[in-house]
Amino acid sequence: MGFKGIVSGLVLTAALAGCAGGTEAPRSSEALVKEMHLVTSTVPPARDPRELEVLFWSDAQRAERFRAMEQWFAGQEVPAARTTRALPKGADLSPALQADLKALMADTNAAGIMVLQGGKVRYEAYGLGLRAEDRWTSFSVAKSFTSTLLGAALKDGKIASLDDAVTKYIPELAGSAYDGVTVRQLATMTSGVKWNEDYTDPKSDVAQMNRFVVEYGGDAIVEQMKRLPREAPAGSKWVYKTGETNLIGVLVANAVGKTLADYAQEKIVEPAGFAGGMFWMTDPGGNNIGGCCLSIRLSDYARMGLFALEGGKGVVPEGWFAEAGKAQVEFGPSRPGFGYGYQWWAYPGGYGAQGIFGQAISLVPSKQLVVAIVSNWPAASSPENRAKVLAVVSKIAASAE
Image (cartoon, rainbow, N blue to C red; front, side, top):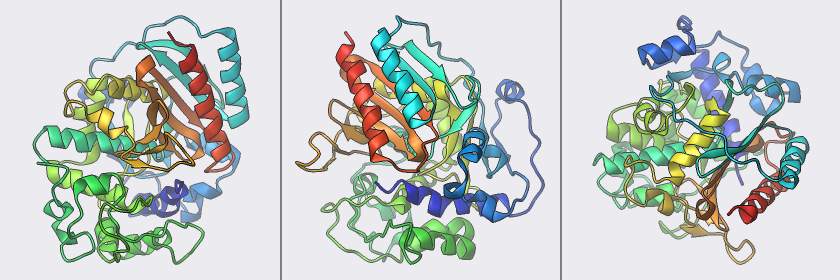
């Protein structure tokens, strides 16, 4: 589904940011950061860019580095919430479902699974050396965080309407194929602007992101996207576009006058009651990458799911998550019930966030169910593994009262 494009284009962006010079930021403990309520920038030691090619890390390297991305890439640190949302213990899942989840962990090389129902923990397990207090990278699950910040900016009046022109918030796109494209069409990836997500093609748009980063630094996203041609009328065609997710990040940051990490601290981390700090990668201009790569605890992925399930505590417009998780774009009769919303994937009976190598937050609103999974799949993308995850989620939902 194009998830690999995030790494092929954006990991180098973050890598270049990490190698851009400067001194390494002081490393405070998470407790001290929480107490002082700081947002800090981190710049890891300079590394050989070849070491930063995530798709080519070995299985052992991924298992170690996915829980320590701040040691490899530049980014912003956001402290834990001042008040942690408790996740009390609930009734254990049935022995059969626990066996299914243990098998899923083994079959898909999962590092952690947490199941919440009604806000209570019904299952929690860890592997691959991950501990409850460790963080794990999100990859494209970050898209759904950025979508939530889009909703928050709408609620705050910083974005007047999803039907506003994208160029109202990113004026540098005026005169490009994005003329006449709305914020809603950007959020659903239906701009009609042509994009090639084939990461195996060195001439693809995703592959060319690297060249634009080298040439334009922090302006690379807009500089590349404004050169793209139109292939279909706006709103008529869905194409998965890594570049457009990053444009949403630019748009939100422009609208609110803050980095995504700063805004997320206020609009997600605090109201959702995250127990741990959050790390969000940055580009060479110090801007958070809208489509990729934040790191939080497994329990905080679950808290994010709970935050969405409960409607966002007034941070987003009423009914935002119901609309964001609905199939604004339907994938057709071959995949009934599946589609794409506002940077969330629609499933039969629910919706969720997905990232390469098996990261996921799956929600079944009718059962008040959240299933958070962090993984190290052997391959970046695996329809087979994704189907296994959704099958187990469906079994849990079917058994839930």
